[in-house]
Image 1: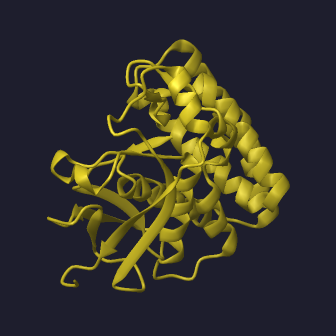
Image 2: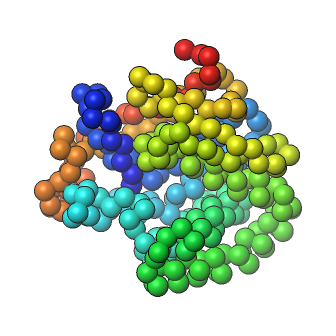
Length: 260
């Protein structure tokens, strides 16, 4: 789960929102479908479903007493989410086959490959991250061989999923612009894209160089509005809120420079 908090001067536009990992992944897929390229369907589906491992957790999230909110996904350690990720790969294989499962698994590898470098983590979390990598590598290699995917094609597809994952996090409010992202071009070479917020426009951004077919790309999802205070008094209050049916739509826009 992640959270979209409006800046103080924009609070009248609405309360903070709780966005599920699955909704964030759906937006990743929307972004890749708008790209100025003809991607294979398994890549597009993998982008949309890359966080399938979080599905069960998102239906019953744990409570962070310090923030008064469900735990942000970054606050959950690998000892908890590495087994979830493995189960997500298994679900992807059962539902859509080895190509989608391969890319979901590889995205987990991107996360866990960076995990111990980026964070001072508990021993159990470091062990879980390494255990995921060790277990999935031979499985991924077997799937890639059976699919006839060479290393360059696989690296490009993996990088594209990672790119739209990061971009979606920014559009959902978890990462702040300006932001530089690395995107593979059609030959697989990496180029730098820069994301900037549009002044005076909440959750509107420019991205350059522009990678989409249309001059304006709007993404959408559905989230749970948090209380106006942005937090819950206790876990019982959070559980009651989670059982409610209240939802709200949210949007974000990417606009090519020079366009309204």
